[in-house]
Length: 427
Ligand code: SF4
Ligand code: SF4
Image (cartoon, rainbow, N blue to C red; front, top):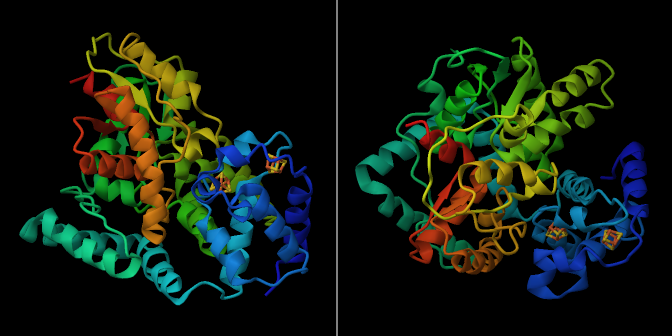
């Protein structure tokens, strides 16, 4: 199965920008793990060029390297020539999936997790209810032990306490569809509650909405939302990603709103891409572009409206980890720091290598557990050096990964979403 002519032209155009300078190599976590050129951005671009130009087959090595990549896009930020590496690797994964070249285990995992569970909000809720019952009856430790055994069997990797405790109630079942601003309303915003966030981070979702209400927003939380599709897009399932994106755009456009506010960086980055996703669809392209323009990250929005947090003293030492899809895909790094420094000028400590991936990377910590944990170790060493009480990050995957690292190292540190830090000041 080949890429379409248009896809080939776009990919070749992106690839031809690479001037082979190698400035991306020191920023690449997988190159750092292996010191192997083929596991670097430049090496992978060469592999893609050969395959996209039909000069090489889709070999096992090609499949391995495209899946070994975290899609963290640190190389994109480092690149002086503007190579859009994220689009390239996702195109390559799409080609691998269309060509049926993924391993059987990977295909089974994708089929069950991405196509059956995450794709359908009904199935996702069903799985959530089963997990919650098991966790309530047998407690989280027993569920973790089970997951631990499965991981060990398949990945020869020691993990512990990997599985998060799901929320007692999904966020969407706790709130009504319309929540008015506290005081004067200046904006009307949509809040997409997401798939996993809705079930595991119910409190973070509530904190986000509360801060938005304090910031002068009427918040609309449409029922029956779907996953944004980012996990599907990043893992080569572009068709599924487009279907989910379309469902969400149609649902959200039934409401009158100024902005859509995302508190998950992976989802936010992808929603800002909806406009590009439908560029070949004459009937939907304009709608998707207009929709994407209204999408804002939580911190980007608050800084944009000159939000003032409550004037309360925070005595804890705080640091910040940049989520890849916030800093590298959306170029947002100053805004969260700006908000944190409003709260805690003297207690902020910058994290060394703050923009180095934590190893979570969507489903990477499940499909490449050993590599993911090695990458996490570097992050944890840097976090320990800060001696911070709280590490702030704006992505659910990073939160889970950092919480895991904190538990594993037995640290007296909390991983927290920026929205929680802000909402705590209103209590
Ligand atoms: S996306 Fe990340 S892991 Fe992949 S090549 Fe670029 S820097 Fe390396
Ligand atoms: S930094 Fe950009 S131009 Fe240089 S090798 Fe990496 S991808 Fe190519």
